Length: 368
Image (tube, rainbow, N blue to C red):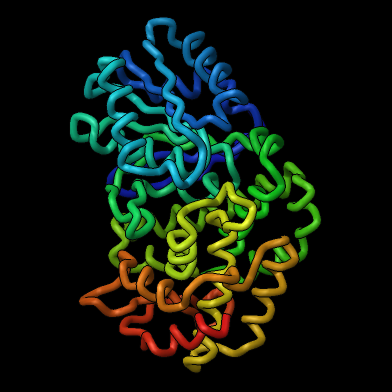
């Protein structure tokens, strides 16, 4: 398959990210990563009708002896819960999955996070192969091994680090992606330019029309460059004890917005993850300018690019600033009860800032 690009992720548990069209139908490639006799194809109610049967058939054709079961969870962030996790564990038990079993996570970030967490916990750890079907999951959640579920108090507060055995980003799947979800994924792509690569940011400014139109080559380039950045960071900091936290630019604000809205991303009035991150990145940039770390010009440039991709850049109306700040206090990056945020010194220069003054954050939230 000549159109397939590969990004290698090194470290103690190395794996490869393969990017290109038609990968979900390539049973030999997929089945090569199933070490044992059992495979659970975990997907959701949106993705299952589109791809589950084809992936199951491809796996069976490549490995007739492989016992494949399909588990379909309800779609949406509101279902990334301990209850859904328990149902996935029940599916593994019903399959009789042994320690050499494999979970294939077919879907977006919700499916990938939950499937990865189930894989981390079943018999203290089995293999997980990520099959992301959204742009956001291709460039972010499927890579790096951060798995989790949400609880009412906050997003991704229960989870584990569990690197995948392989990642297959089938760019053909993006043809069925709703326009809103494509735009939301582009927010995470913009993030890589914002935190470390001004030239990539310039490329995203120049290629906006092609990316929004779903141009195959432009999307493949954006995915590959994003994954290369994340792979390098994950290799150096697999457990997020330093540099990897930079990948969370805008996420502390964004996660607070998502949690306060009840993870109701399927509601037209509520923000999906990428949209919340877009708002969060602008808030982080604005706060950086107020703290004297960066100028206003780069903040304006970031806001303009995100708006050009059809993304929101202001906090949704009706959210209580005090409640948002309370959500931010539960962020996993915080230490000793102090806010610890990813801010920047302008395009390409993000850093983790400890002990951020809550009064300045609350002032910003009240204005935003």
